[in-house]
Length: 327
Image 1: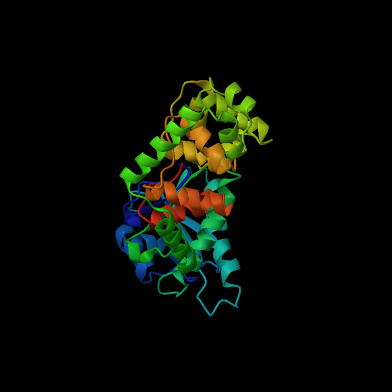
Image 2: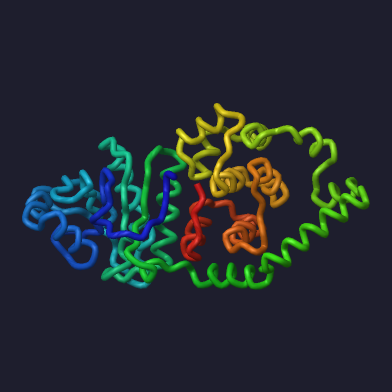
């Protein structure tokens, strides 16, 4: 997928460039910056940095990767947290934006970021995370690149307390065990079959009988392409909003019988801003469904019901709950 959140040591990432959360003087510091200098070779990297003459807060510069698996290091000077009223969010956004634009200028295809300014610079982790998601997401809607947000451990990743609590409450209120869910689905199917009350069933799900019948023979790929046209969007915008790379989308478009993974199928439903009923229809074409006995499914349902179709924010929540991400 173009954007993913991973747990790893950023110095071990095998990408075109890793990003160093640096200071304006481009000197070896503590935290992530110190770890990168040590892994790259302090003397060699410091020599390259000295030749650049510093870096303003929010700007970005580039050096070789020295002894790292990454080919390059992009250095960006993040803002020091001063309470939030000193342009911190704008400067932090610029760190991501300028780093990505520098990578694009150097024809790099993959970049790994730490959570900039969230360490010794004191930026609140949940707010720093939101800025990172916003900046990276905006860039990827316009450009092709693989971007990683690297967190060393779960303590380094903090979903906003309000969102975390809201999702937890939704799961608690709606979760059913697997046996109960199976009995509910069986009873629903039996009712429809025994009563043949298709008109009432279709009315309840807000879909016309004509629409349902006309779409019975569609494959997942055919339905997806039809929905793209009906929603008045484009192939490019759809796969970008779905956090899907262009090559995978090309496979789906060229093979009408292509069967995607469940996260991929859901990603397209999110990209097209489908209702819960429409999402279920699209998933059924690939042999999947949403269940109230599955935390992953319930998080997806939560965001759809909230009308939040930002796939990067959804993946942020899925990561926080130790679930597979979309794309």
